[in-house]
Length: 327
Length: 267
Image (cartoon, rainbow over all chains, first blue to last red):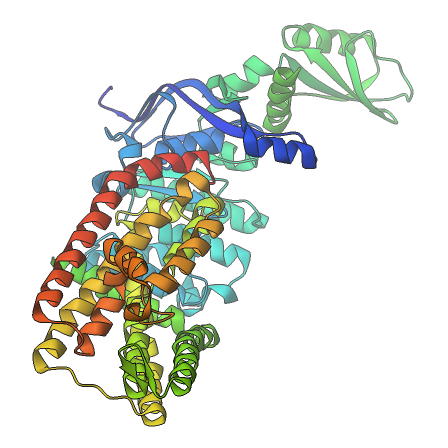
């Protein structure tokens, strides 16, 4: 392991053994006598490293194996094969020293106790993580300021809105100032303002504490705002590991050319794939390497009022990545 | 040790705060705990009445004393986490507990103690009321009363660790409701809740004595009623120590294996 890598996965695999049976009573009875199992490979030989202080986006469609991988990294699941090291620890051993340095935030897992004020839940974490009072106070104040918790701390959790609760959940998960953050869909269900605030917060936390962040999200805005580097998995396999711009390069061979013409109803299919026609406005998809030549040709051949060439949005690219694999 | 002192006092305060939010549930549980021995007591008093005031080596005042002490011991030693383990494993509720640098068993112990602490305020008047209603006779020598305290503590520990270890089977069989039901029925007979063990057939007494059941409830009850000789008490402490050791050993051996199985179920 190189000195700078905080997280390292080496051919990491996880296979679940799940019982299978046909529907119906007869099958149910049969399964009592002979249980059949099926192996599901949730994660297949994934390898990558994350340097200390890096923020990496961990992407993939639902069921790709992201959560399984995060659970192996945080020590909840035992890998079937391969190796994981997080800060030099083998996560599944769940050494106290390891657990004190990491956190896993999952949308549906609660750090907070429903019926008591948020600050009581914080106090509980203080005791469990053995945080010195003084340091704990400072951390709470810092988090309260960064996340704008204000008077939320004195309210029982059940009286909080989803967004307020999520902020408090994240604060509770960070009281022990973990060096590694595993964030599984941290912005799910939040409104745009709250999402933006949370993104700012993650960035700030990363800077302030030099924390390493591995984040999954279906919101590309999260990824674009936070991660230079992304790791994409699909069907449990690693598809891509690199920076965002090269993901776009690699998986989208097209550019979008949008034209405003003086005339309506012109046929431009000879120049590229027509994506949409709206009166005199036409959008074309052209191959990247031909983009320059075709735009020149379009300008020369046609009565063009306006022309723009754009990279596809990261959302479109991701969609394409997932679609390619499914085929 | 000071590490645990802070964790225990903090978690204790918070557990009390959480439980006080659910007063109705607390009271309902408590009614069950008080009602069950009263029902058995009334049944046995009726039997005694029909037999001229005596059942086996118990007269009516002796039966009343038995069930009042049983209620105290059962309340002090019982734990419910066994019945929650299946749920925790199935739904993944175990996950946050596993990711904190504290063995989940600590939380369960603290919750248990917090519950006992809160319910003491209802238990004490219940004991006084039953004493006034059923006129029990207690006649234990001082040494037995003194020995009762450690015996009760050991009974609690034996019951807690044996049940918690047993509950780990949830990691293998997921739905433990059937197993729990079997355990409850066995415990009902073998801990002396249904009837004092001395009224049971000899073979039941033997089974209860070999298994941990007698040492979880009946032993401290019989001790406080002055029904045991110093030798029997000594043997009782020995059996308690043995079963506590067995419970702890099973826990130590199976815990990491159980957690390994967790992946195969909910997570």
